Image (cartoon, rainbow, N blue to C red):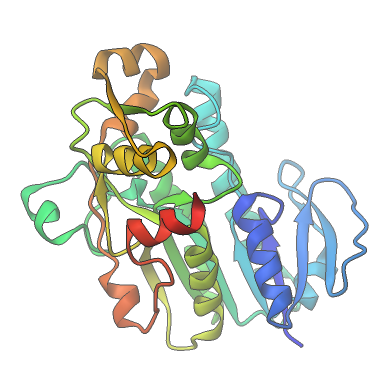
Length: 305
């Protein structure tokens, strides 16, 4: 039985991934800040402390694969200077800590699957609107682009240890538990379609089940290495996304435009990302053999709503 060690395993994606891995017969170790006891077969917890630079060495020694999902929520709080540093540090320091332990300790880790994000990419260009951003496109100079660059760089040394590294640049995750969809649903329940800015900005999304299945694909597919976009093949505009959600819930919709300047007042610098258009291509992961369960927005919303 193979053992998968997960950082960020208590978050929405991590919890869903843990359930998937257990159902497939894996042993799972989840890193947590506080000691926890598991009463679930094949699931255990181990302590780590990023600030103190500590991971329970037995967790590293027992793992065959590491899935690195840890990172403070980008949209959880307004972007103060302090919060932006937390967003960066939670990713970079945790990545560097994994590298340190994999370098210093005896282990049997063969594969690391790490999260990144499509914040890597800048606003759409004529070319990206036609073909979608691909994994070889340059990093954006804005805050999220720089964060993604530091995030990916923090775990890059893992490759020099002879470990297969798979990096997933994750789009907007749609799930039943919360996140972006929960926020979209709040006004949609009343038939109000709140459209941000022009509404023309492209949203590259992925169903949470597909994301977890893609991580499993990364674990199981020995030929997979390098960077892959974790997005559906059906990016959609903000306007079409919000209207589709509202119509699905209520059967009708009343468009409520939220002008860009209002978003800037409400959200500050974070509004730039809400208003940014980023059409991202899923071709590389599809060509590698991944089959989407929810390839279209219609199929995803039918499952989620």
